[in-house]
Length: 511
Picture 1 (tube, rainbow, N blue to C red):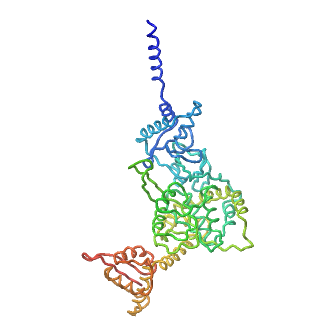
Picture 2 (picture 1 turned 180 degrees about the vertical axis):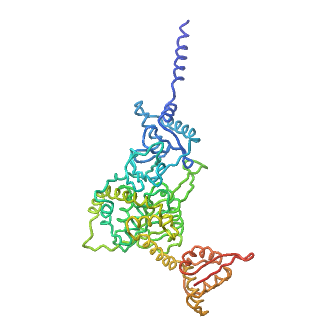
Picture 3 (picture 1 turned 90 degrees about the horizontal axis):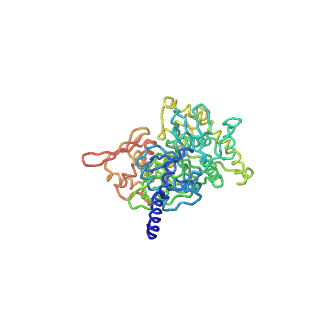
């Protein structure tokens, strides 16, 4: 062997040693596969720690409550194991590979805040947002516990920046009535409104049911925003707060999909787009938005949320939204009874755990009564699930929350018709036609024709009135009539659209 051969052999041994050493991306990939299992939900891959709480974390997006993303957790694991920070390129390669491997992972539901119990029918879970995953479990008729769901058999939670931690519920010493009474003492709600407010809070603990939009209303100085925050924070924690009105439907969809309770402050007016969007928040919707940093992929935003508005007056409401509204009226506060914000929130923070525990105790009783609503109720309004909840609540408490709600719904019909130019015109025309024809009260009045025939008749009865919301054509009148028809029907005016040959017709019958 010559001396010139020695450097060449040393270089070959160093090259072989370098080739045998796994890359940083390979190390991170192995950590991910060893410590996590992967699932698919809503076309997205999530990671679930094999030895940890039942929390599903996204691969890249940041999170809250100590969960973060898989990228953050792998960074932490690598730093603890090696004492060094991983490179951004190594992390990116490992996450991209795990995402590709997870594309054929088992599909599994992931829940935000509320979930059904997969083992006990009628039982529910509520995520407290704790890093250890401990959650509120409510059993029908069997009380409640705070425990950690099984990673395999329990619900999997997802968290966002809008999932703050809640105070741990405390079992009230004097029962749920005394615990909720503490909250009642801080809220200037009317006697008819309070049971409905309790129903709304209970509905917030239930997964996947349509809930009406709670609307806190009252004169200036009744504490609408403060009351709204207290109701919100019972379900979302002390760090939650009311939000300003969104700019458009895309903004509303993003906020609704990321948080549990959609709580908007100072809703002095509800534009048409927002009315439609709130209806979808109540009944459930899926929005598609272009995914960030991609050219042609989309992100799915899914939501069906408890919702809350505060304001003095929302003005004219569309009928479909009015049927999904829950008006919570607040009483005027006497100057001698006013308390400082500091005093109010100190009292609220001190009672928060007891009130949440009392609400859970009442929920266990109501959950046990809910199945009986299927045979116990005779008639159901449009919000049937919500009506059944109030029925069960009344059976447990002896309250009349369902009757109060139905009475408010009837009053909202008048608000809708008074605020809708087409609805007012139809009622005015029916009254004029009845008087002109000499139709006796209770006697049927019927008219049938085309929308082109009806348009000038309705335009004539509102002669001299100006409103920029009046439809400009007969075709647009048809859409407005369809929207206000349910409210008119509740006032004895039936509007039915049909077709005769090639012509579209409309029939108006009034009693």
